[in-house]
Length: 215
Picture 1 (cartoon, helix red, strand yellow):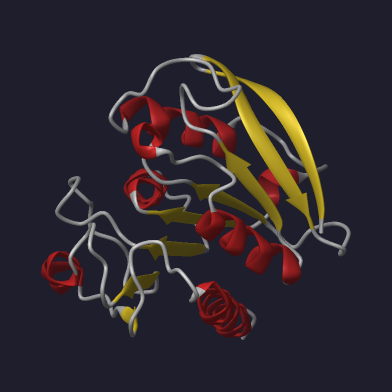
Picture 2: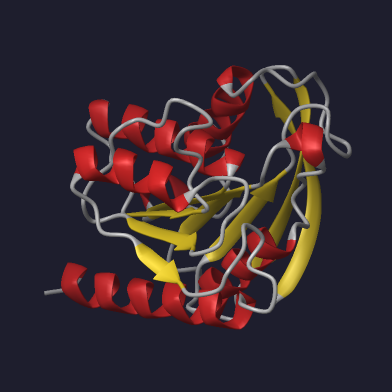
């Protein structure tokens, strides 16, 4: 995997992104990955975010990790998810990452606060008739922020011992969506010592979903 850092013009100024390029050329698709809450140390090099990025890149996807407003070299101020959503939508809809990139499959993935942002991005794209092919929510922010309903085909991963977002809150939200939850036994919110397993679960999901898509 080759990483490249860029500054992209966005709605509120420059957006700092890191592109993780796969060995495969051209990439099979583009995956946008969102980090946890910026006011609590969240940034694009978070270990869970990096793990998600490596999972996508290992399967031939270009992974785009972006810093939210006010983090790193990204300009602007934290906007409680509103401006962050606009920035993600800008990166998804307005930026061509590779030649003919607009026609490439799209994946969205987010961790904690980032799950709230990408879930809303997926909801907006679905209503526009341009749904993402894959949606992965890790440590979903149910109970913390108003998570929208998501498609039952999304992958939802949570730690059994998550002390930040209780598993019971995630079940309450997922029950309305009728979406299954993959619970990692013994895992806390940051999946300490469980990142390898997290990556394996994501890769298996993507392989299975892509196989089904090709039928």
